[in-house]
Length: 96
Image 1: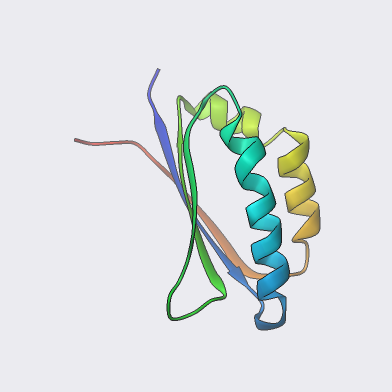
Image 2: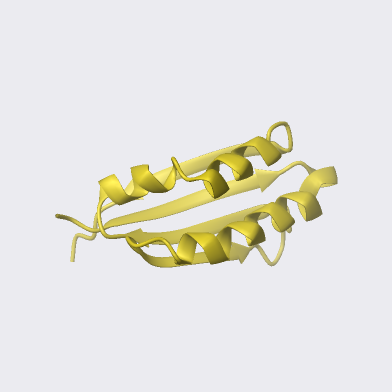
């Protein structure tokens, strides 16, 4: 089983920054409690507050897929509908 790192960039519409931030913050506690979650951290860009980066480590790709089926993840997706400019998710494997 290979650990999976997720680097996700979420860019909020200018008028939605605080709502998006609030919804992202709601994800932290329940996600960190998931069995396969190793690390889950939220960052906000110092120069463009509309840009958020999620840094996540999961025990496996299957664990990340299970995360996406949780109620808190589904609620987050619904809450952010129409509030984002962009969302890019990089699924990465440690090389060294």
